[in-house]
Image (cartoon, rainbow, N blue to C red; front, side, top):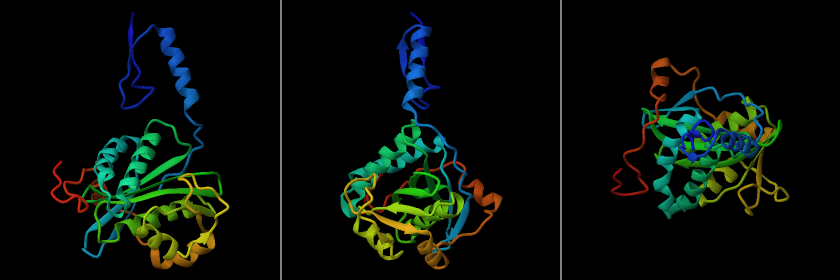
Length: 248
């Protein structure tokens, strides 16, 4: 028997099978069947936002190579019951894992860093050329509107980079409802079934985006090269305001 490592099939996961080459080829073909088609999406152009503290939040598109660090960032929050962090973090973890092993159609993740440390992230996917699906906004570094800036960046990505007309959104926390549904005056669309479950759906239309963009969408491009380099390699947070006494 010859053992084959399928790292190329499942990146980041080493699956060792005692098998011959023909079995390896069958597994490779099966993996191709499990993966959704990739339509190709333009990348989000990086930008930075100056926060009230004077820190610079660099927002860029996360790559598949970033996802293991993001999973490790998110995992501790799945045990925090306050402000519904548990359900949001658990779902984000599953969504990122689905993106990582290619089980989601046209997903994306944007990550915001301060001096390279992960401060917040958002994710979603493209439904089709004109409609987008917002998944979650998860913030570690609270109190500086990092999450609000990241959500705005997500809407900017759908509307301006992907050229879509509608983004479907649900909230799973009271903070989320206040930040998105109320602040953007989102349009109720209960007839649309959001992928996150039974919560009533809302939609950001292009008209709403154009109305609120001047007040809510901030940031500067291009990002100076030195500042952009700080976001190249994601750094795990050493502290979580949501978890007093946290030690990694």
